[in-house]
Image (cartoon, rainbow, N blue to C red):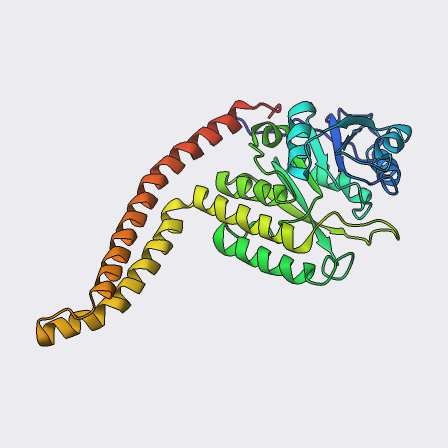
Length: 326
């Protein structure tokens, strides 16, 4: 039986051999009002990955981001629908490559890490490499962001699995197979969470790599809204939890409803056994209704679990239908 081999071959810069084929690499930079930093990002990635094509997708910028990016040598396109998720969905659908690097246009990510990410992706036959942000809790974060990151990462690990330590990292490398089979239904900053859940659900081969995370330059403003985007991310996590683990999701709801019903019903049962009477009909009706809702919730979870398994199979088939030369 033959051994699976990566389609990408890399040449050691210190070796005396000739050049070897390299993958077609696309650097994808979603931008909204990043005129101050985008030129530096483009230059850094052109230096780190000389053979890569850099795509900047302008998302309704009003500060001339598109013109700055074009002058810096990027391929510039526009996505009129607001939100990072909409931009990433458009990028993944439009751009053709073997390897994709997704990075923010704010200049906080170190381009020099990209070659190592590409090499790890190819040589280890991975579908995604996530750059864990060093110093993410100290740099470029308003009050509450660091705490929120810790809470959401802990919640993700408990619900979906321990594959990732930094689910909000915007610096990732992908295989073509991942990009072209990823559904991308998110609209905003919750897109990174969706990517992570997709990989965890399909049990795709992934890895993490440490990468420096810098501060935004003076005058550059984060587009992340602490409370609004936290609510969106939490909502996305709950929706994905319901979609991915419906039996467990509705099982917890059923258990909670049944527990409340039991707490309300025990005193009524004790009174009935002692006197043969049920003095509090409203409480009895409420307890009975909660017990019925608990049974309905459990039934829904079991039915939707079968549906989710069918959807998972379809996602797996869509993933396998994509070819990237492996």
